[in-house]
Amino acid sequence: MSGNKPLLLDTSFVMDWFEEAIRVYRRDIEKYEKGEFAPTRKIEFLVEAKHALSTTNIAKSEVFRKLFSEFTANRELCIKVWTDFVRRFFITELEVKEVDFNEVAELCLVTPLGKGSIPNLIQLQFAKKEDLPFATGDGAIRENYTKYYEKICTYIELRQAYDDEKSQQSS
Image (cartoon, rainbow, N blue to C red; front, side, top):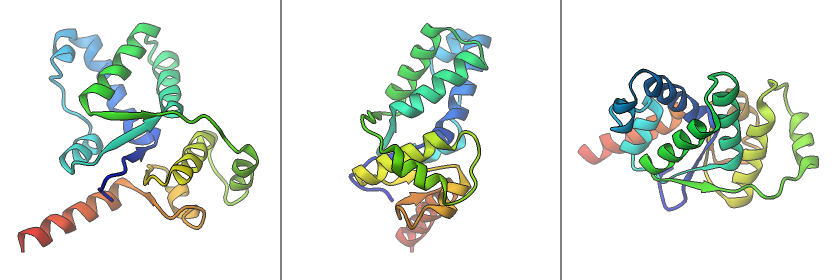
């Protein structure tokens, strides 16, 4: 799934990094500023695999909500950490401007979903509209929506494809 089009990451792919960034920032600002903390396994892999990465303003909103509400980060810290993430990993920020909520409502009738699934469905709809591969950590999205959009992948699938490609190159 590497290629010219950036891989669209849903929030589950990036949230762990933000949680760790906040923890490090609060423990040791200097270490945070120097970037002296390991990226999460998922982010580290995506960088190693040289995927072009993108995320949306929806993921940004979800990250801000969690950092502000659950981690009690102030506005400035939320913005700083987001900006650092985008710069450190060369993330392309994409803006979802239009949502077909009737289509999202129909997607909700495919399978039972958790409370936080609507943003994932909106991002899936955006990925389809923009013809971007969609990387999700939400198993229900991957398992139940490939008929709607076939370019859905999980970390495990991306990892397997990368490992297979590397082993073929070394053969």
